[in-house]
Length: 238
Image (cartoon, rainbow, N blue to C red; front, side, top):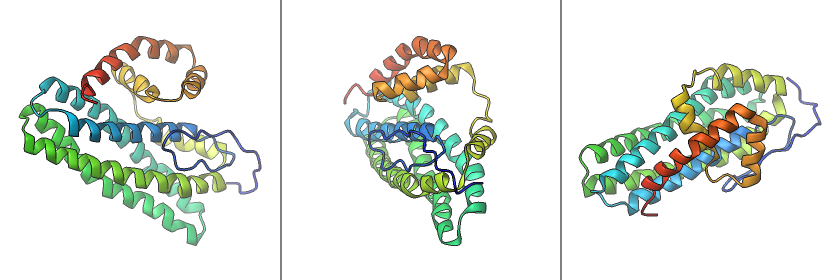
């Protein structure tokens, strides 16, 4: 741990992002994931309100898109709860720990909403009706708003603690043990890579692809068309 580092790395400040506290730790991918989570829940809430209950193809596409989103979000939150927040709790001052305790509590508050959304999409694919559609649309709005509040809290306060207490080495250790420790299949990568890149500012997307290396750039090029077709099916009414 070090609280005396003065070198600041360039962070991203992406659309809808609340803050990007300065400091020595490169947390750009954290903000990229937040961008994707906000983007998706805004899309799902709007699409559920606009999509006719009996357009089975659109709902099937929305269900597929939800699976990509929910799988990544679950892994992301699990990594924070098992690795990031406990590490910071060991280092933070007593008056700072409430923020970290709130992070996990907010996850627990969001989880039932996500479970309800998951069930709503399954129901709309299996047996669509207007009552289910309306209930799902309302739950998605609630999930969107709760997650937005949580991400704002995290970006303003928890990320400031990351920059205050963690070194680059600490951050890499947490990433390796808690965020990169799950084996990702090639089929998952074909969905997740274009999902991450969707609607990112051009310069940020090109920045990430340049750093990712040739294999990841090739994967993005061959996967983006299929993902774009899925996105078009899911958002045809927007």
